[in-house]
Image 1 (cartoon, one colour):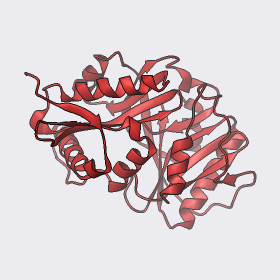
Image 2 (tube, helix red, strand yellow; image 1 turned 45 degrees about the vertical axis):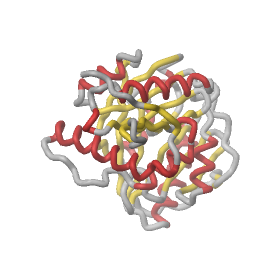
Image 3 (cartoon, one colour; image 1 turned 60 degrees about the vertical axis):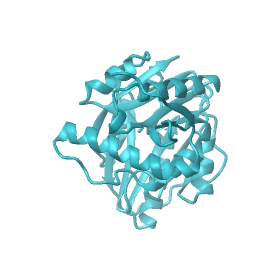
Image 4 (tube, helix red, strand yellow; image 1 turned 135 degrees about the vertical axis):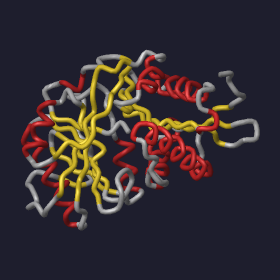
Length: 297
């Protein structure tokens, strides 16, 4: 189909209501096509939109039509040298007319301009259309992302864990990896907290930024050793239970087998599998000898 006249610009706080409507419409359509049942809106908590924008304003863009109306949007987060984008959404009224490709191109240019060396995304495993779209830009679908969930109960506070302190060097995961912006937003927006050990960090959200009310969410955890990983999870699960949250969700890169083994041992169950696609340097980094879970959705 022919392209349309669209301008891509940085997202602003005043755009968030329109972005939420476009995102719900776009994802509602694709979920309906994949499952045969279109879900009711809203699909994503309002806090997802506001906290993603707060975390990395430079990585959030909208596409606007000639009247200034928002027709598409993309969020991305640069974690130092490692970045990811999503969700990407285009209004169903203009899908297939190049809006998504414009947003992706602008997003990639911005991430690379800020020194990101590896860019990732996670998309529907059941949607060849999405895999094909991202493959046009050089992304390769050779990896998986697995979502895990557990019903949690109180856990005794572990030793050797600090809350809200300086994050250790995460070069053991990816050289130049930096989650400082996400740590700052978790504290500054009162949506969660950060736990650290000498060899690891876990960012935990208690507010419904990705999951619904009553569920904890772990957007990032990295630990150099098994004891660090276990102490961090004890701290996160205990903090969630203290706040009367009933479940905890975490997303794990498929190559991190030792992380998956630990989660299964702790009683977590896999709920969904997505396709992770990557573009850039050292795409197999997440199969390293460490414990690691992150969210690319």
